[in-house]
Length: 68
Image (cartoon, rainbow, N blue to C red):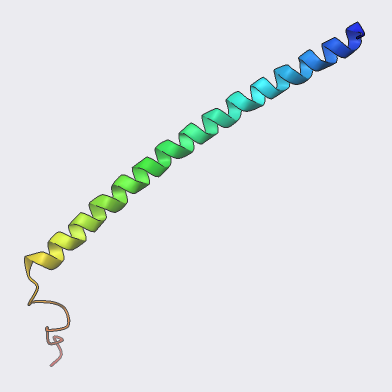
């Protein structure tokens, strides 16, 4: 193998290592964002359930609008 070919392969390997590190960083950031969104969804789900369980008989469907 010629020296130029070895240098070219080393350059390609270096670019691939850099790309791999960049993609790894992006994926870990996305996973943290997904985890935060998942926690928010769970919290909202719990709040909705607690509100619906707090007074199941008194809902907006049972209320008479104020103009009646």
